[in-house]
Amino acid sequence: MNKFTINLHRWITAVLLLSLSPSIFAQGNEDVLGPCYSFWYNYNNIREKTSHVRSDHDYRVIHTQYRNLSSDIMVHTFAILRYSTNVENHFTTTFGAIEPSDPTVDINDMEIYNGICYFCGTKTFNSPNPNYTIPVQKGIVGCFSISAMYSGLGSLVTYEVPGTTQLTRLAISCPSQQLAQINAIGIMDDFSSSCLVEIRENSSTSWTATLDYLPSIPKIHFSDILATHNSIILLSQLKCANDHFYGADDYDINHQKFLLDRFSWNGCHDDCTASYTTHYMAHYQLNTYENYYFHYNKAPMALSRLAYDWFSVAFGVIKNGSGSGGIRFFPFQNIWQYDSSIYYPTGKYPAVTEMTNIDLTLETHILSTDNSNPNGIIANPCLSDPPITVNTITTPGPKLNSLTHKTSTPYLEITGHDTQNNLNLFEQDVSSFKPKNCLIIGMKDPIILSEQTGALYYVEWQFLYEGDDVEWGEVATFEMGKTEVETVCKRCPEDH
Image (cartoon, rainbow, N blue to C red; front, top):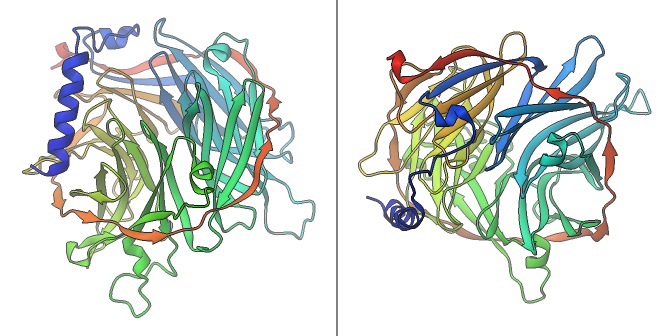
């Protein structure tokens, strides 16, 4: 068994022995308490083109966006389920848009921290000059109190982040005294350079923002960001000149590379402004002899927690000399080494959508797409020696767009839409797959690949508008009410 697996198993065992109780999976939601293990729900009154689903011990939040065909306005819906009552309410917003010519908001990521739902995205304005072809865009962040909005008493606020054109991923850290810091990555207003914005809560009424960037490395692309038990992890890659495969005269070696950075919960600015600081990223170049090393330019890459401050990286790769592809999965105890990694095959053009982890376990689930699974495939790579089969989950029809782990249970919650663009939700117990499920269960044969140590990659962070005041703007919401849900499929032990 590899070193990573041994160390992680020891830590997990110690924690579980201290915390294990007969009610470890107890929840107020009757679906969890009951014997049924697979569910498929259809929402009659919520449309979906893209979605995000996140949860904590108390609530599940689903965000959907869908362009209303009659009004040509982008409509956003947030559905909030309170687990203790199993009652789900929802509210809707257009982020101020009344006419089709009004600015449009796209939400790219969402997280829950300390009872607050945070999100980030892009606000697109119509150009004042009809001959001006570059869209006018601004990165935005937003948040709301989940319990307050669930009760119909809260407010939704947003902030347009200066110097940015889009924000793609975010992670929430806690520098001190339960005050939050939003760490969001995106693109600066030159439409090219990557950036990291840190928006810190100083009190209930005071927030400040700082923009971090790397002007000396113009080809760097920030892919994902993650808050672990005590750190902020930044995953990056170097932009490629083209997508030509290995062996071409103009092959770009950046197709084999990715980078990791680490900051304390105080963030990049606090860590990197000290005069004595010399800062390095960890630089990885995948081995050509492993055959599974090529990723496309700006390939979607994902981070996920494993346990405590361990984390994992995943992205799609192409098998050398073949059009086929698969997913590479790397577990890390720190940014400087992975002891081994795993590859499992999918189809051509693999792309990771999201990744989630079941608390304090090696059970990580990756949602991705490829030409054979355009509606999504979920897999749970788990490092072991010898390698074991990777379980997969595919859809019986709907498109899968997001997934989360229901805290303290063995259930995944997965959102997507059907052919009518109605929101669909799957709940699946992944602790033991039964013969009949509402989703389609399969298997993949994994390949375990060797360990690697990261090289030192010197970076010099620079900062804009350090500690500027943040002014949140309230956004109008409407259509508060209960969701309308029907059960499409429900599988229980008696269905065997």
